[in-house]
Figure (cartoon, rainbow, N blue to C red):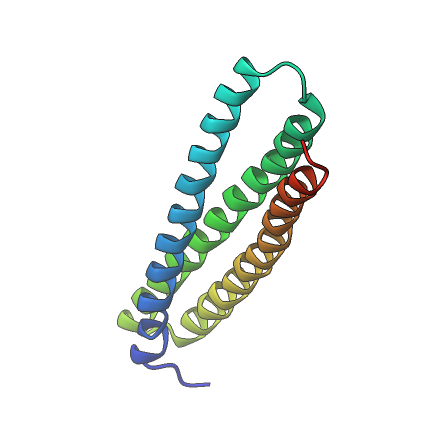
Length: 133
């Protein structure tokens, strides 16, 4: 398989936009955690909902960290693949590009899991409001 410099270069915009999206998700999550912490300190009555949200946020933090790690590794391997193409080591370029694609797939799969968990957090809030609390 012959790999040109253009093939891994195609992933550059996708990976950088993905990392930006992940960073925004992390910042949004950080804001939620800070607000929840303030709410937890003020209200001692309804801890069940808050504890459920805290557990949910912990899971999301772990997933976002892993998403970012795999995204960064994917970007690193993509650049390394381009370097191997530059120094004319086509086999190494193909292997590192394949590994880059696998890391990107893992990152996207984790992102999908995080989306499902984040919607559960919203369901907890809705249930709490529907219960009339």
